Length: 127
Picture 1 (spheres, rainbow, N blue to C red):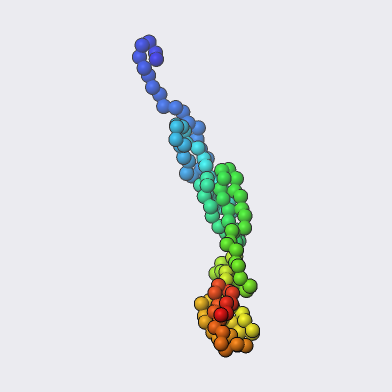
Picture 2: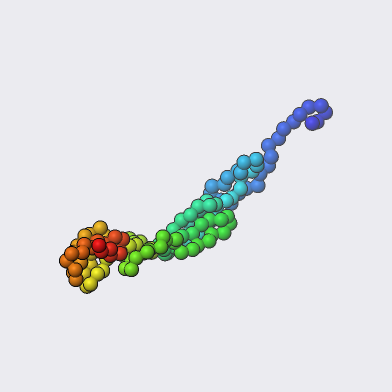
């Protein structure tokens, strides 16, 4: 208020040294919320795979990047196999009395022809 009149001027904002500045709700000036990692820029909260190790995931928690091993579901089988990335174990094939059976495959039990066996996610079940 100047001599009974209202005068408005824009709030001056300092320059921001990032490529994707954001103005959080309730603020006027944009802020940097990016992390630099392995030559790439990531937004705050973004999860990404390491360029050097596909079994490592990273997260941008501005201004820091935290990396950790990829989280895999447990493989509850005797003979787990690695997934296509080579990071996580999966239950697929079954190995039984010197033979390999595929997940879902049914076969007679070699020592008891009256029993039927099946391979289910790496485990043999016979009845």
